[in-house]
Image 1 (cartoon, rainbow, N blue to C red):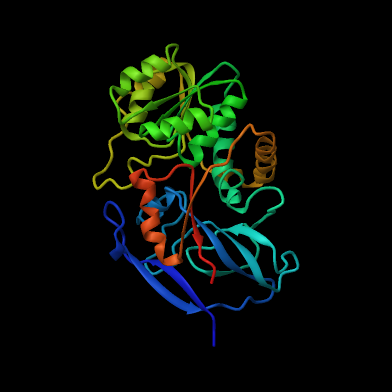
Image 2: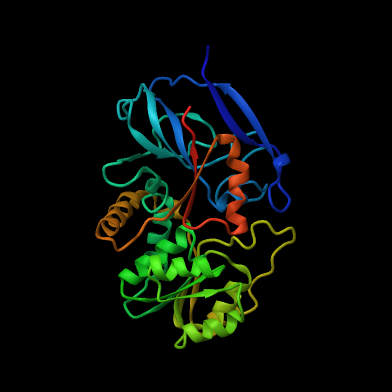
Length: 337
């Protein structure tokens, strides 16, 4: 009897937050790897805000997930069969394997994960695309210098928490923006930020003025919307704004408006630059080595929010990203079969 491979496919284009009707749950036989291929059994699925954009039928940096297609997702798993000379049975690997229990790969875009170096979930967080986004976005686009004031939105999230820790390591003053007292406590006490502004409590504009009295040199934006607009009013001369994400806008049902305070960029001769980690693919090894060193010395702490479940739980777990339930990197651990 063939082994079943459960999968989650995109069933419809969501309007607003995805609903159960937007998904298809399918089962197929586990595929056999061909020549130069190997079979991976999924252990962890990465859940990322960018997934919401991939569901829209709109031009972007990557083609949309097609209706009826297995949902695109980074995942970590173990090689269980191999016809590939570079990957052996028992290897742990990460790659874009999709939301399914088993996947066949030819090795392109696949990275090995060594559990002797770091826990496996960390290879989808600090040592994965999340950490690489923080590393290259902050260093190459934000270009912080010791003594700079760095503000990070989504500071309790997967990317934001790493950005702030790297900035602190570089000698910057770091101010986070997060939702809720508990997340702000995590940001300051565990991630080591100098301060954290709770955007759900009180006057955000006044709090930003209080914690950035001399202005902002680098703003790493993960949320867009009103928060981006307010931080633009705090820019210093020559400031750099890193546009990494806009999670506040991803489920909007109306076209979002642009920032009203964009003239601050002109007045302060500042820059606002979008960044995608995929542009740094030829430097992933460099970034992973640097991040591994920071983990080893304790300069960066890995924080994963792991939900135990099955592939079928993916749609529900994904919503945690947009309701503010997760802290750190959100992962779905696939129960042993």
